[in-house]
Image (cartoon, rainbow, N blue to C red):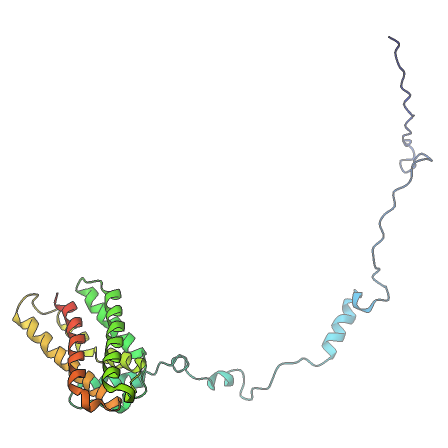
Length: 248
């Protein structure tokens, strides 16, 4: 076989004395030019820091509307956080005090129904049950909801079209009248577990809660005087169930 010869073109290297020199046929590399120059005529691309500082500091600085008495004057005019959330401690305390005397319940403070007080009593009831070794958070909450709906339907079915008792008011009344049961739950921590004394004390607090609830429903709703006995029976059933949670 005949050997084939390949011709390799000569490669030219720069001389040692002139490192910057190159062969005539090699193109010199060009450095890329920037898209803009610092001293170009474009105003927003100026890199003159001194002129920029002068231009910004010479004009007026907007500081917002004048607050008169300083920065704290705006916060002094705002309402308290509890009022913005709809929680009024004075009204809650007044409603709780009205339930303490079941024979003279002040129904005027309960016309503005709320759920802050019932939630507070619900948490207190759950806490006392927890101290007794009973975890009943879901059971108590479910019974409160079912009891409110039960009282709402009972009264409106009795009153007919003249019934004006809404569900929100029923929930508020049932929640605030839980106060005797909450007190009984606290006292049960010091009472004997079995015995007639525990049942007698439970009966007293159930009658207390029934009396307060019946008085509030009769006073707040139109035509409640005609159905006071049936409302008292429904209230007795409601708070008897809650007292059974404490007894057993």
